[in-house]
Image 1 (cartoon, rainbow, N blue to C red):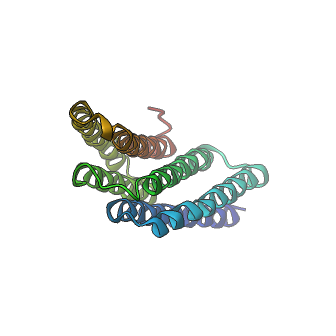
Image 2 (cartoon, rainbow, N blue to C red):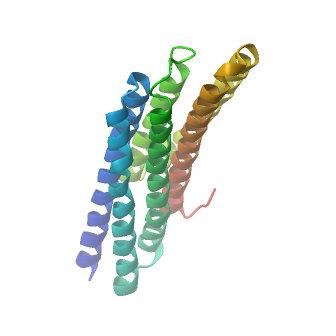
Image 3 (tube, rainbow, N blue to C red):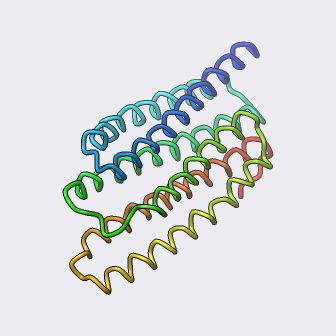
Length: 213
């Protein structure tokens, strides 16, 4: 029974790692589409979101079956419960890639009011947070998970700076309001992706220590 449970847990861990890696790629593609105003790539990201929805369902079903059939306790049970939460946050991050890509299509035929600098830099921090959450999940490293939680403040700082800059642009050029609001929404989606990464890190800590932050 222990061997069977270990194999099931290993299979779930592999799927989480694959999902996280694919989401890192989706973040890259989302930013590439935005920077280059690439409608085809943005549409590919939108279509690709379906695989993340399906993957979430598959992993949840595996966890539920293991809980029902293997009746894990203590650390194993906490691990499975944390995975159920982690996979939801991963899927939400993928959803926000889709949301940004939809706005990218909306912005495809306009000249940007300014070069994109802070938004791509913000996305790099978010992508690194996602990578670190998967790393600390693999290693069950609570200290690394706490670093991820602290990194979220960098994302929040970027959001505040982007908000202030867009606010000034809109005040000086009211005709740019629609575009600036789209960029503000993109920054907000990235900020939410940082929040979901923080959630994942906190669930890693719960899975290891049983402590809910």
